[in-house]
Image 1 (cartoon, rainbow, N blue to C red):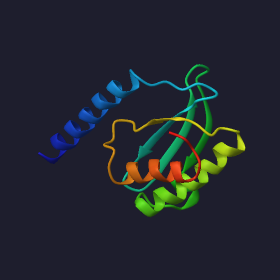
Image 2: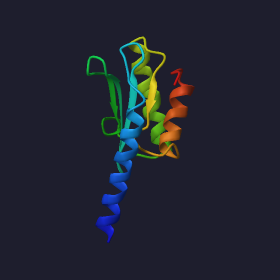
Image 3: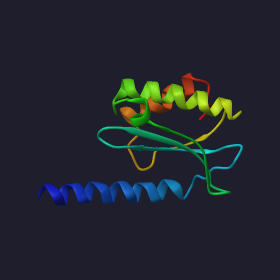
Length: 118
């Protein structure tokens, strides 16, 4: 039963992800910020979909940050600093099928607080 529930949750998240990605895309001047979260860590990427390149990436495992709200604030601050070093102040937020709640919402709000316009 437990494996079936997990498979269904993943299937529904991927379904939401496809629906979201049909409407958003990133460019070099307006990259797509994609989030992936596991139970242990958070990963962020700024992606240029036109050239299929990752502009900036940040990982909670490299910074030693846990996947909670406090960790989301820290990784967002680090990521915003890296984006500003590349002269990027505006981006499109891709929640990657996750609900805009908890860690994902905290991450987006922290990016806004650090000067990235979403």
